[in-house]
Length: 139
Image (cartoon, rainbow, N blue to C red):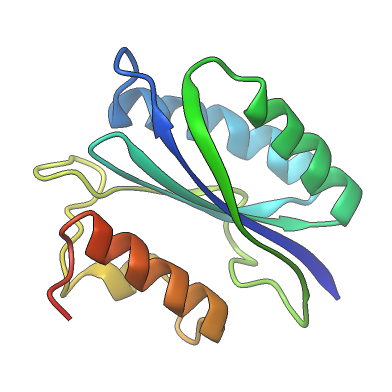
């Protein structure tokens, strides 16, 4: 069993999705050392992140994120024990979903590329909601 925490937040106006890409790159190194995996999506300053690992490690990381003054309006969408990791190969996969984003131009067609081949029903529902709220998906 693995602990999974999914949350959403907004970036402060002084922080761009490109800035977040640099943060994600640095975080990937630390996350690998703590055996934390996950995914980070950014769309025009709106963020969706999945963190997975040992419960204590994920909670310590999320506490650090809550104290980061670059983000605001954090909302935990899901905390659960899962059968397996959704992102076992990603110490922190990052996708910039903003229009013209150099990392990843997320659309209704390309959204599945940011997700596991067989996402859990919970992740599928949350990612679809994120897509709809951010105008990515018409479905």
